[in-house]
Image: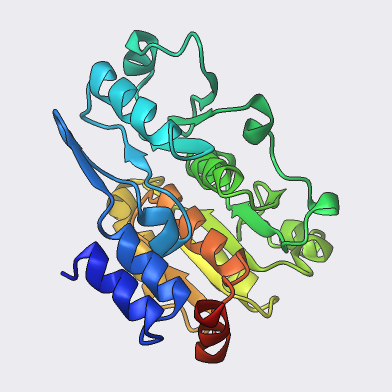
Length: 270
C-alpha cells in the first residue's frame, strides 16, 4: 500500500488523477474501536458510506459505531436490527427512523435527511420497487429504506404477481422513465421475468423465502430467477433486500466526474 506522501507526490506529478488520489487516500482512513474496524473512506471509493449490519451486534457497539460514522457523514443505515436491540440503544438525542417490517434504522445529523426524495424535485430517475404479493412486503421495505438512505426517488407497485397478471398490465405506466426495477417474489419467482419483458433497464430480482414446502425457503424462486430467459434480469440472494436496493441505487446514481491529466496539470501549475 502506498503511503500518503507517495500518493500526494503522484498527484502532484500528474501520474495520478485527483479522483484516483482521493480514492487512494480513502483507503487509509480506517479506525479500530473495541469490536469493529470503521472504514471512513468508503464513500470516496464506492460512492456511499459504510452500512452497519446490525444482526449479532450489541446495542452498545452499534451506538459507538454510529457516533463515529455520524461525525463524518450525513446519515447512516443499519440493517437487520432487532427491535429489542433498538430499545436498548441510546437514540434520545438523534434523528432516526426505524422501519419494523424491514428491521432497518436510518440515523441522520439533521431530520430533513430522513425524508424520502420526491421524484418531482430530483434530477435522478427513480427506482421502482415491486412485490409479487403482500407477503413479500418485508423485503420490499428493506429495499425502499436502502434507496431512501441513498437519496434515490422510489416508486412502489404492490401485490401484482403472476397469479393475476392483469394487475401488472394496469400498472405499466408506472414502469416508464425509471433507472431500474427491484422485484421481490417468492413461490415460483416468475414476476421478474414478466416485468423485464416490459422495460428497457435492469431488473434486480430478489427471491423471498415465501411459499409452500417445495419452495424450499426461497431456493425454488432463486433458481427460477437465475434461469430467467429475460436478458435484463440480475439476481441477488434470498431475502437480500438491502443488496438489491443498493445495486439499483448504484445504477440510478449519476457517475462521479473525473479529472483529466490536462486539467490536473493546469491545477498543479497554479
